[in-house]
Length: 96
Image (cartoon, rainbow, N blue to C red; front, side):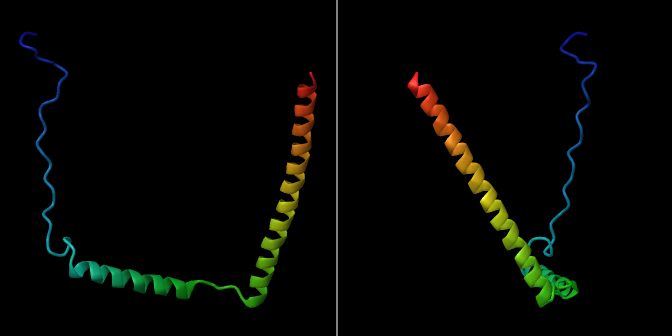
């Protein structure tokens, strides 16, 4: 194999052609049309949503508030306990 030939090298590939941009894909009024279509589709989707009634909304709110309160108490107790343990450990090692 003389002259730097590489048997495993690929032949140069032909460059891939990109699709030509037309006026509809370049922007302008087409973007406004797409925006209006998007807003219409969002509005249609929101009409299909099953919204909760007042009772379901209050129940979900109560569940969230109760869970937040329970987690707050849990984290507070855990923090207080770990603070006491860390202070005790510091006092133990500082005494020596």
